[in-house]
Amino acid sequence: MLLDYDRIDPELKPALENFPGFEIDRDNVLQVRAMLDEMRVDPDVEVLSDKTSISTPEGDIDIYIFRKDDRPNQPAILWIHGGGYIMGSADDAKAKVLASECNCTVFSVEYRMAPEHPFPAGPEDCYAALSWLMKNGAELGIDTSRIVLGGASAGAGMAAGVALMNRDRDNFPLKLQLLLYPMIDNLHATGSGEITNHAIWNLPTSVNAWEMYLDGTPDLDASPYAAASRATDVSGLPPTYICVGTEDLFRDEDIDYARRISEAGVPCELAVFPGMYHAGESFVPTAAVSRRMNQSIYAAAKSALE
Image 1 (cartoon, one colour):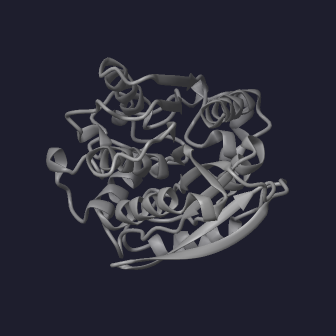
Image 2 (cartoon, rainbow, N blue to C red):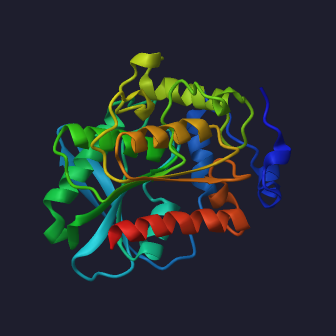
């Protein structure tokens, strides 16, 4: 089944001429990472940047820290970068923009990635970062009663898994899980998951990424901490914000997860943007639909951090 590209918002189409999408497998993942490193551009925002590391039984984890100012008792976002569980960096543009737009501190985790470090390495790193943040808030200048856990794409999928992990372990109080087009279904067993040629992030690449992250194909037996769609119980989670575009591979899995969370009694805001492909708001931030999407994201985060 193929995507009808006429459904994509016209303002978003020109970006696809220069970047039609990823084709990634185990053989080229290192080359794709290098390409993305060369393409990285800092956003036009003024934030203070710092970096620290925390020690865990598995080794040290780097954490990037972005904030507008150094006032005490700030709210914070624990941010998990995207990249299909196999690429990306904690020195992340969205983390910096969120720090600026939401006037908070963003802690962005340099978690271990597949295929070198398959699940559960990444979520365990992020959970260690959450625990560190919650236990050291005062010295970090953070109000631990105002913490959001968030991410984009695979980062949002990992955030969803870490939120389930947190519920089942320490249950640190979280104001919100901020999930931007989360990658949560290793099977893509949905209507939008039947379309093979989605822009930016297509089905074959996503299947390959899941295989690397899960170190195989456990299908329905995948851990819900890896693929949140596999969770049979989604009660007891923090309030949730989910956004996705209508032309995104993840559309239907995200809508279904929002439905299930709502039915479990968890407050959940779902925002679906017409004509939007995966991460289109980052590729063409000036498009009208991108501005609406970004404002929706910032509004949800700022409301939770008040």
